[in-house]
Amino acid sequence: MPAESYFQLMNPLVFLLFAAGFFTVHAVRPSRAMLLLAISYVTGAAAFTSDFLEQAEILTISVIVVGAIYAITATLASAGLALYYRSSAPSRLYAAVFVIHVFLYDWSLTANGAGWMSSFIANFGCGVIFTIGLVAIRGHTPRKIDKLVFWLYAISCFQGFARPVVLLYASGGSLSPENFDQALFVMMLHFIVGACAVMFGMALLVACSTEIIEDLRHNSVTDRLSGIYNRRGFEDIAERALRERKENEFVAVILADIDHFKQVNDTKGHAYGDMVIAELGALFTEYADRDRIAGRIGGEEFAMMVMGEPIHAVKDLAEALRRDFGRLRIDADSGEEGAFTASFGVALRQPGESLLSVIARADEALYLSKELGRDRVSCEIDVQVDKLRSVSNAQKRRQYRDGLTAARG
Image (cartoon, rainbow, N blue to C red; front, top):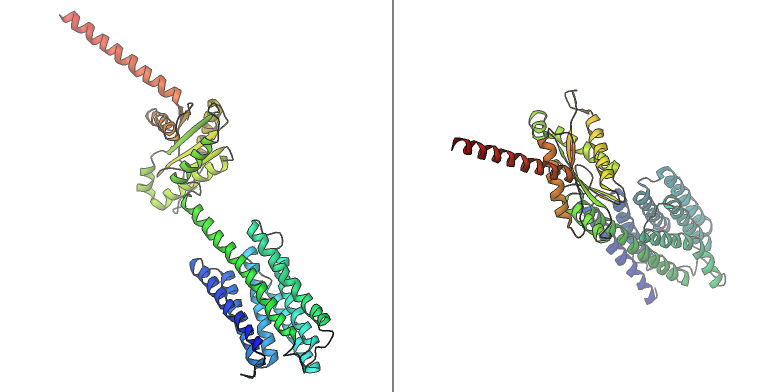
């Protein structure tokens, strides 16, 4: 056994490192796809090790067994990739191709021994198995890193078909059962397979890791119950949007608060109250778009920042939300249907005003809606009118008292 052949031991070590990486991802977020990919790298390490031990005559291992382990590795990797990007894998097709592949490989070894034909069948069969996964994930790789995974995987598919042909040509047709184990083919096979597996594994681990990070970031700013931004997410996104807007551009805030919500929790339970919150959250989601940012900023309080629409249009939007919520009928476990209302407040941002200041003024309008009987929309103009009316009434009462005092004097 040439000393250079010990280079083959690098592949099992590298494969085990990637297996540990995919097992770690699976531990963080349990997934059949990650589990299959991790096992595929374990079986890949076993295949390379078995191949080395058999060639070094350290351990007698059937060549057909080694070939089957390589085929298992290809099948698990291809199915794992399909599961990751498609959430499903054609298991029957994989099983059929695997059985046919192993049968043909065994036949070629029995008929011709280890040579070009057996190596061609081994590589071609694995190439077909890989191609099943490639076809399955085509069109399902939205991110740039996913596209990189796709093309690196495509290279793995291609080299499975091309490698035996290229190396047979390079060796001048000299591959035979007698010199097969010592041929350049074996060294090149291990190097190319290992290099492709390393590049593919690195790209896929990065894709998985970035997805987990993106999900964690999304979850940190999303309210689990309503499905829209939580207070932190709403304020961060809304303030960022405000900075990108011109000072004279229309920006308004709608606040909504479910009426008598404490009574709902007390009489029908918190689970039912959660359903009510989820329904209002779904309504806000339905009305939200690129210029309408929605969030749940308190227990039963929701907010929406509306950009590019005048105050009367924003008030109409709040009215539509109020009407739609009032029409909802939410089923309780007892079979009863519940109808609910919400009060709304609307405020228009003044030039240079902060988001929190606009929210505070919208909250004043919301409080006025509560005072006036709930299930209504009030805007900051209504608040100003109400304040003026209060001042006017106070002045009249003061004048009346002053008049009585003067009359008694």
